[in-house]
Image (cartoon, rainbow, N blue to C red; front, side, top):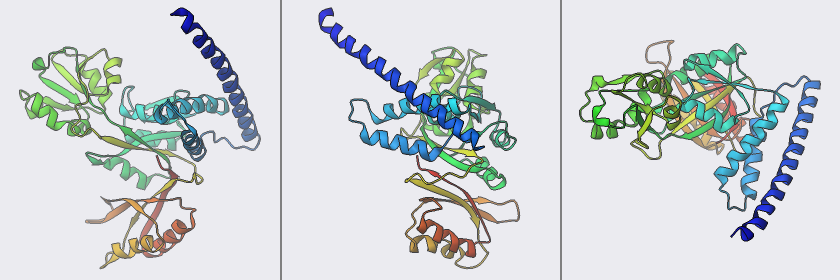
Length: 359
């Protein structure tokens, strides 16, 4: 058997040596790009549109047997390491370590970054506004539970822009110091996670009353609390269980197997077109008959697809609302620009939150 394996292993060793050489050549080029940017006072190391183009091109060229998902994550880590040679970027997220927000950060930025842990979504925005972080990642909607209202409110108030989006499949697990769920008397979790698993929890833990479900600021905080009491459990990610020494009792307890959360990347930069983009805006209308139709009509006329329409109460007056809209295309595309120009004339308020690569 060894005689059969040795030539194959020798080929792998040769390929690994060539990969190492090519990776370092790529890194040297990234370092040179960083020097050119510094000479021109350009400190922006993360270019969402460029990285999106690279990932799309790589996946189109991928012949297998590695899946596109594995290839994408591999190249994200390569770009992360090379990007760090230009500049070490700081990314703020809702912590502590072990949250789905942290998973989203690592999925998009890779591991060669500085993580800035925040206690709330407000702090994520504040960290970027005060330059304590270069970017922030915040949840904006879940496929099961809908919009994250606090993120939407902050988007109206902040001068920051949306630079990108991340769609993260959410798989919830129930974890405890004990593997015997019949002994559990209370469960800690973030309210969104409890809502995403309510059918499973009611069906499998009938002994628990409503008061036994205790809200935590994050799923990682829930895991930390459950680790202090053997009669407690937490709902969250498997990584949170590992971080706090808990046993994963049951995996994938979410009621919807396609459960996904969309996160936004916020920063201070406008993003150039990537070829497959999305534009987000917030607006309000005059209080008159047909106002919403008048706002949306230019989109249809200029052949701009709308992928999301959500209303959110404004704090400026009773029954006043802002509408959050996601459009397919970049604000610099001719048809999108024409539609936005007409909407600007019809709306009482319009804020372009950003154009960025569609995930």
